[in-house]
Image 1 (spheres, one colour):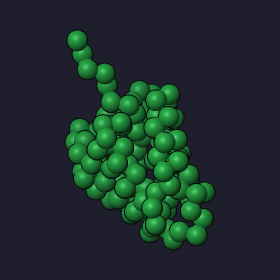
Image 2 (cartoon, one colour):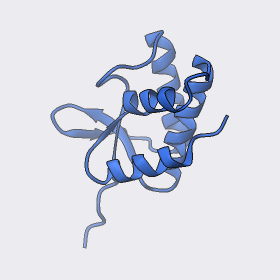
Image 3 (cartoon, rainbow, N blue to C red):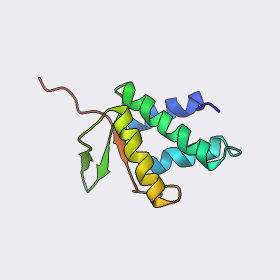
Length: 109
């Protein structure tokens, strides 16, 4: 299965206005691909996150009243961290769990 293109565009637009929780990506993929098995949703979620990171559109972190960026931001390291936490959780992530995504900080002048 492939990630629906309109979904990628929607997250780019939403991410320009607010942080995006991992749970929201999972939920949207489940709505777009209702027949996809759980393992496929997990794979597609990580692929979508890696695409956003590779494009420089997002950075990963956690929300702790402010956005706290994860120190290692390679797409592969973020994917590993998400997959490890997801497996430990034993279910789909819910609101606020595992990761949030934000626009990268603007370059300083």
